[in-house]
Every structure is written in C-alpha cells, then in structure tokens.
Image (cartoon, rainbow, N blue to C red):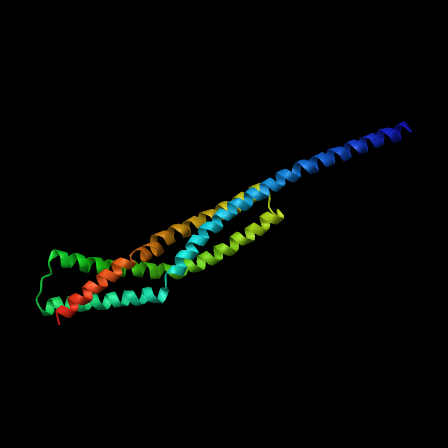
Length: 190
C-alpha cells in the first residue's frame, strides 16, 4: 500500500508539473506567435506600398511617353540643324530635362514587370510564412531565418520601387510642362 501511495504521489506531482509546463508554454507560445505575425504584417505593409505605386503607373502610358519623347527629341534636333539654330541656355535646359524624362521612363519600364512579379512572389511567400506562424510549424530560430530572408527581399524590392516607380509619378507635372514647351518649339520652327 505504501508503494501504491508513493506511486500515486509521484503521478500527481508529474501531472501537476505537466499542467504547469503546459500553462507556461501556452501564453509564451501565443505571445511568440503574435510577435511573429506582427513582424510579417510589417512586410505586408511594405509590399502594399509597392502595390500602390505600381497601380498608379500605367505601363502602356509610360511606354508611349518614352516613344513620344524620343520622337520629339529627334524632330527637335533635326529642326535645330535644318534651321541652323544654336539653342540658348534656357532652351537647352528644357530639352535636357525633357530628355532626362525619357531615361527615367526607360528605367521604370525596365524594372516595372520585374517589380510586379517579385511583389506577387513575395506576397505569396509572406502569406505562407504567416500560415506557418499561425500553426507554429517552425521553431523560433527557423522562423527568424525565413523572416530575415523575406525581410531582406521585401526591403530590396521596396527600395527598387522607390528608386524607379515613385520618381515616375513625381515627374508628372514636369512631363506635362516640358512636353508642351517642346511641342511649341517644334511648331515655331516649322
């Protein structure tokens, strides 16, 4: 009987310890999961900024603008040569700024599709990582490893979009003004 009582006491103590460990790991695990999800939300927020930038730029319009600038620039150069006009500093500034827009549009076009595809891929990867965080598929260290890789990729994409897409949007008024000025120059030299 003493053996049975001792065994019963050990079983009760193990049960209590198991209950304590389960309770201790529960809130910590929930806190860890919430923290991981918050980290992933920051990546989602960055990707949303990229998505919004892309949605504000129309690829076909930018391509068309680039072609218009190329055409008008060539036409303007032909007229300067044909009429033997040496442009003054102000005219050259307008023409140079207009030509710089073509380079900006060319860079935007070169990166636009890659940014869009990479954004979609990263969105899927972050979503998958969120699902894994919710189900706690990974331990803390494994999650950190995957998160840091996704973070690096998302930040790289974010920076690229800030360097290529955002300037395209910010130069809208410059394009309209310079386009009008160049067309006026061409018309006056007919």
